[in-house]
Length: 246
Image 1: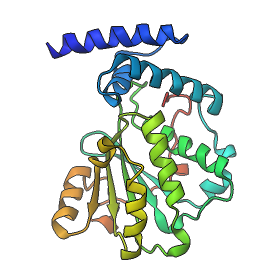
Image 2: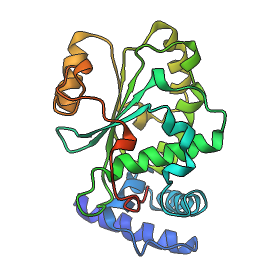
Image 3: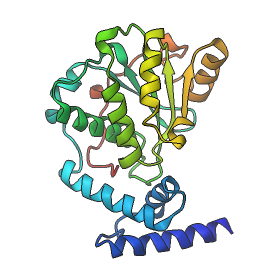
């Protein structure tokens, strides 16, 4: 019954997209289902979201990917690590908050968000994209000081994920949250949809730390987090840059 409901919603969504003057021709059901799930299985709302995403992608990512050369300042900080695949096959991305400073160039920062999300997802493709791949994000707040605080960056990142990468987030963990960051997180949380908030876990005690290690897997987590791996800077990971479609 559920599959029949999905098929009907997919058919209606494809028609809705065509009515809006766009096409779903080169996109499979797994991609379209992400938009449907993000819009509570409403074909018209999902169709509108899909068309807006395609328009944004064509304008903001005309090459189909953001090359390293367009985000040099952000890459220089070496604040993003790509650790390989979790126990459940999700690519694991770590953001090292102590290496982040508020961007002077907001456009470059937005391009960097696309660069890191695309690259993280593409690192999990086996031959090609299926369309329903998800990622695990880890924000490590250890050794952060006031100069690293950037609520705007977190809000922009959340808005990009919600608008342009629907159903791409499997889980998001916050580690080592200092007391001064609690107010910042409360502010950021106001911009998060309920579905996003439900995927976020603030790791604050030993039981949660062990759950975090269990869920992600020791093989990909650095030793500092209780795993057996080292930090792997994103720019040291090679993926096919044209593989991802948001």
